[in-house]
Image (cartoon, rainbow, N blue to C red; front, side, top):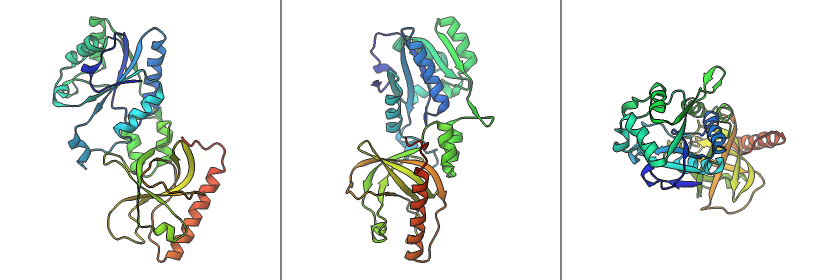
Length: 311
């Protein structure tokens, strides 16, 4: 996959079929858009996905929606998807104020767009003034083909990044994974913690996610950890460790089952499969350790199901 950091950088002398969006979560609806691009590649067009990078202020401002996947995670999944070209545009003031027709002209002139595939709710151009109706008119005037994909539904409700984000916020990981058609995950560096788990004979790894990353509701989750392309079974706690701490500092700690290696400093992928309980405060270390063993056994039982999807 070729990657460009703006539409202006595109320098391939090929005819293209294009889809555009934020693609947060790269969910089942997004997958349908990509599949339509792949079908048109058989006609000699090169598939291009265009997405956007928010300005840094949106990342550090807690009032903004956190992302199901970071920009780096999204890029990785697009590489795995089979898309030929990925253009990651900075969503700056210039792009934001581009009029709808000028935006389409830019796609035609700079990336040789011959076909466009979008969802039925697609909006574009300054203040979102462009819509599917305008695209239909422009496609006839300017000679590119247009395919509009209706929103995919689950339980008679549209599958959307907003809906998936809400499920994750509420700890409904199983539902979020079902809507995405993939498992929610967090990439992060393994950092040093307080070694409390080790004292309980229940060692954990701590990871520090990106500031822009959406974190699930506090609780205990069955998970897998991917380290150097190897998959390990685990139990992950997301929360503030109320048994030991009285602050609001969030931690993400994973006990990797039958694993005893030093991986501090490594980048790992923690994949969330199912929530098994809320985070609670225990009155003693003994109570906590007993519950941790129950959590571990729940994980072992879960992984005994051969139909579990781990990636």
